[in-house]
Image (cartoon, rainbow, N blue to C red; front, side, top):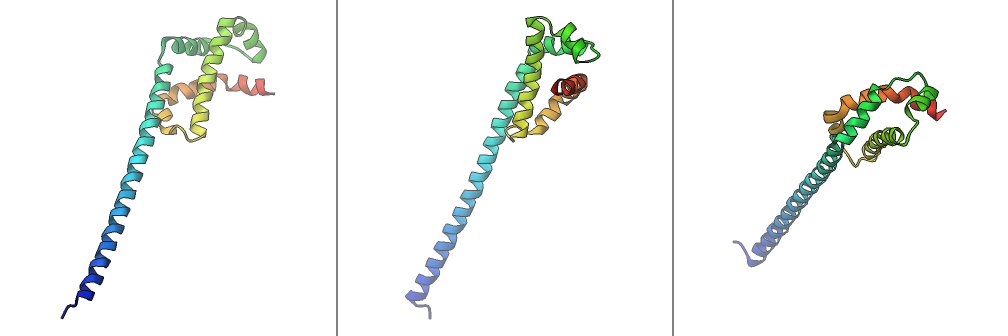
Length: 138
């Protein structure tokens, strides 16, 4: 025969099990929500940066750099880095890419966003200026 004491023990055990199950499911839901919020923030940040990338000014400065020809750092400085407009344009594009690199490096932006939407332009830009930047660092 079932006693009141046995029913009480079973009921207590079921209550604790149910509470533990509820707590675990709440934690999992909170983790999913937190991950979704992080991904949404990263996407919003990237879209703000991508919007800047697609601006007329950035496009003009990027194209000016890509259309320029130089043989070495001295040639670049003499021909393409002479006035405030060309200095500012070059620095704008360089800082833009540097900023993206820092965000990716620090884990604040997913590198796949950059890869999916900007990899071609990023690689072409680096191929264009890499020799000059390496020489500039020396």
